[in-house]
Image (cartoon, rainbow, N blue to C red; front, side, top):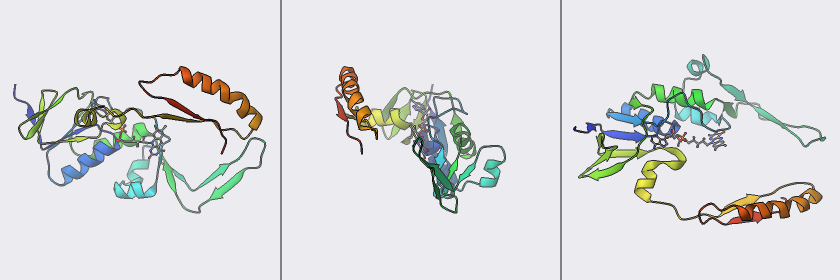
Length: 205
Ligand SMILES: Cc1cc2nc3c(=O)[nH]c(=O)nc-3n(C[C@H](O)[C@H](O)[C@H](O)COP(=O)(O)OP(=O)(O)OC[C@H]3O[C@@H](n4cnc5c(N)ncnc54)[C@H](O)[C@@H]3O)c2cc1C
């Protein structure tokens, strides 16, 4: 069977992949987006997006908020336990609270590309000037937008060098910190993630 052809194949339908696909479609290219998950899907995130992001994405806020959460944030109230609250007001919207299951689904839906969800990218190889993906798709350009464990990054760059794990133990109570530091150090010494070595910084800041 001949592989299905497109101008650009985007791996990952999160905000990066869908935004990239959206601009490429606007430029007149035939774009295919593959994502291993079925949307709407959840993504671990605090869900804060700043106004410049909304502007860059040309997001129609009125259309978006019609059926989705869009919470303008113009200030914060912070405080310590038993302490007085500290109110910080900006007098303008400095961020929006969104739900990633809605935000990512919306961006993917409006990108205009051919989107195939529930399709994991498992293989990537060169064939002349093209890339062959999953032995099913052929494209001269492949965009890796698969997030933290992007298969394109893995295929192109190989495995990353081991990185140290940095752990910060913080408490304003020096007695608590003194009690916890040996326990946390002991626990971390038992943790082995590949060749990674835990570094414990037990100081407060
Ligand atoms: C705890 C936490 C809080 C955060 N809070 C914020 C915040 O408040 N505001 C903010 O702006 N950012 C926040 N971020 C960062 C933000 O979530 C990421 O920067 C953002 O999701 C990156 O988007 P992306 O499109 O690159 O990747 P993703 O959103 O991760 O999308 C990648 C997509 O690729 C798909 N994929 C992966 N592998 C394959 C494969 N083999 N085949 C096909 N598809 C594949 C996945 O299914 C996924 O849909 C937070 C992150 C974390 C962890």
